[in-house]
Length: 170
Image (cartoon, rainbow, N blue to C red; front, top):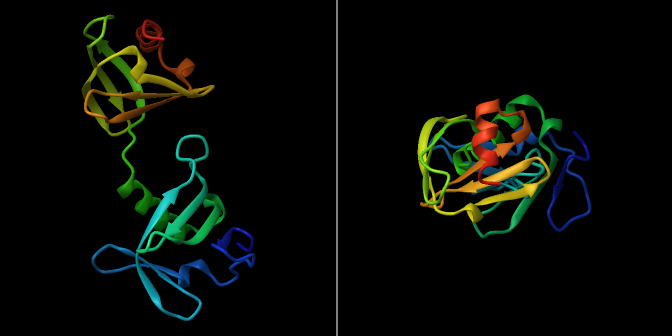
């Protein structure tokens, strides 16, 4: 685990076991133990690149807004700590992944989309084609009329019906 976690503002690597430096309180908040043994909280886990590198460069941010620690790679952490941080990230983030497009009310905007996501089925209104953005070669970000964002990774791997509907808007 050495080399995977650094204290912000310092060049040294944290060699102490991360599971002794991070804990969840009975009220569900994360706390971080600093070098002096003081517990600081609440601490928030934040992804630096949530779409293009979701498992890399995660910061643990203290109550004053400063980064207390930097995690270079989430998959390099031991499982209990990794699960703790993944749960904290999931609580903070809401970015459903679209798995399938069932139907689109119209090929003109605004239109109502009925989709299946990794969080269940839903419907939303797409105000305009400009609300579909390509953020990487294989990643689309769709924003609905309420500002909720949906992610489509590898749109070319969607089923044929979904690809045909999506292609009408790209």
